[in-house]
Image (cartoon, rainbow, N blue to C red; front, side, top):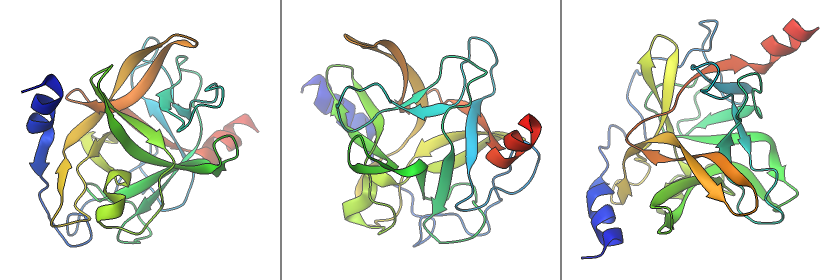
Length: 219
């Protein structure tokens, strides 16, 4: 059996279906850094809880020289909050809850560079790196087998510290990957090292900062 097949055998599991709408009934709300509930469609920065070498927030790969889809990466400076994100739960609730399938979208929602959406999706397995990278270009909404790779979750680590995971339950009959999302150094021949998001047994831990809070502080 090839290394790729072994990896697939390790990761491919039947997702635990906690509800028809990809979430846990009566799940606790996700909280921002101020302890307020995270709201659907409102802009937030996701920033590392580790200062210094831990890096900053999340952003699109803006320097891809026409290569699509765009990668989701972490800024190297902890003072750089990256690009704003919005969250869109599959159950259309106004508050984002833990362990609920949701679309994650960069602002702006559309990339003129790639002529596609800035909504996250799990890309195909990359045998050269041995990773399942997080990229963009997904369709927002439309839960089901055709959009299985577009749904992520926010899980609690402690307090208002969180991690992203990928374990979609929007298709009860589908087989899907289940793992956390972490940060890996990807060595690009043109761009050098970049901190990219990919499935990982070691999750990236973050907090959410409402963008309007940052604007008020600057003003």
